[in-house]
Image 1: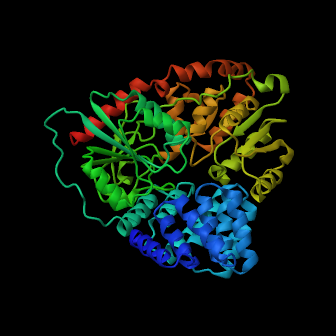
Image 2: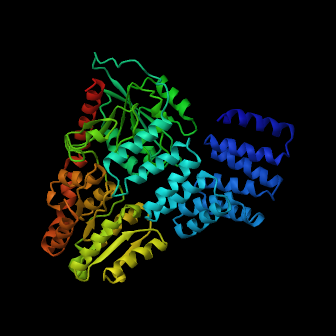
Image 3: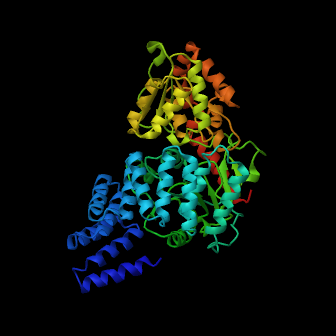
Length: 562
């Protein structure tokens, strides 16, 4: 879309007619589409001042405010639009998005249902409903919504990416199906001529320019895991560029910038512009850190602005793009020969671990085993609620049934999905009062939750990564199920790297047996509580210089063509 031309034309119209409210409204839309959210909000505000009775301007302002996480203001503007026109579908849809961001999923679902009943044509509404249902753990229904969004807007890569990422939460989805779906995305959205076609100059061991691309250089799992690597990179051998599209900078963003040679903000650049910038920077190896997660730049990588491209860290899957030649993994996520045919990229296995962990600076000290004073075992899973598959919940029911008086703490926002889980436990003969929920918390309070937990239960098939490391750092052992995909072997990789293979199960029955046996062994739980932090500290997971050398060896391997 030619948004810059539109901005120029609407600005000219306003110059000719300063009280032209509709021009301000349309200017706001164009500015918003260019990522210029603050300016868009100013334009919408002016449009409303000139014509306060236009529900569309209120709804558009709400969308802009939500982009800046000013959620209460956004909801108020949606309500203003709805007062002016109760049947204005866009206002109900924007209200749903803001409510979802606040974690008010029941209200969000009501709003988006109303929006679709009024106007079922906008693909964005079905996409929003899919995201809400996914957050509530309704994976099948979410995928139906994403597929409907794709039908209505087949050229939008973001809706299609949402479907791809959600497939990993479906235990019935095979590796072959994942590959087929990802290739379908690439066939539809990755048809670009490569910007860089020359063969890399591998004759010299010169200093290489490495570019990392992410919207998540911030307080986010990607930001947390990439920081120690950036800090430990050998600057004599590698020059580090970060191509950031971070909406909200925070202290972690500042730290990441500190360990970057060149920082490029590409948030307001479209994919063509960003790709040409990367090409002009003469990046040798470009690393994607997002894959098909939110705000990804897969279409940028499809343009191939660097001679060597790879994906790392977002999750251990495939992108589907032929333009991305490599995926970084480890020998535990992808045992050699186990699954390479299910990736469009060539797998480059780091020597030991996929992750390099640095604990939060405000993490509290470990505490004595809670069960020692409470006289009952508390299990916990603080992963995103959408990871709690029916198979995992069924297994946890069996564990609580086998461990008398035990409790389970789950992370879940308020809403009907909590009651759904309580009912599942009740139907299994478990008193639902043994089940407790915690909402999203600030980092220090989230880490403090582990003071209540004796044993962590990894969800499956999409297991934890950051959350597993956090639990172990807090002295809480994690039971994990090793599955058929790399994503389902993340816990196995982490536990192998701290030499705790006895906590890795190969079936739900074994998972149950390990959890119940450990719950009955209080001396071992006390021992683990007091030693896990040191196990983490002395493991490959927290040896940043060692990890960086392994990663840099992988980069050299890619550069040499493997």
